Image (tube, rainbow, N blue to C red; front, side, top):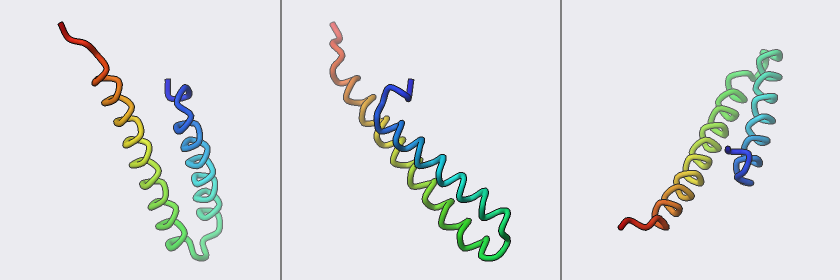
Length: 68
């Protein structure tokens, strides 16, 4: 379902790349905490953006529904 929304595809790709960076940071303990905080903050920002986009589309679709 989310694959039909172009924004979700882009956000999913970016989230995957960020997860890969976090995994690389776990393997390399030097500077882990700073990079982990940055990656986590970016993932949270992506999640908020995705929820905002999806909510806007749902609200837009709901406004288009006719009731009686």
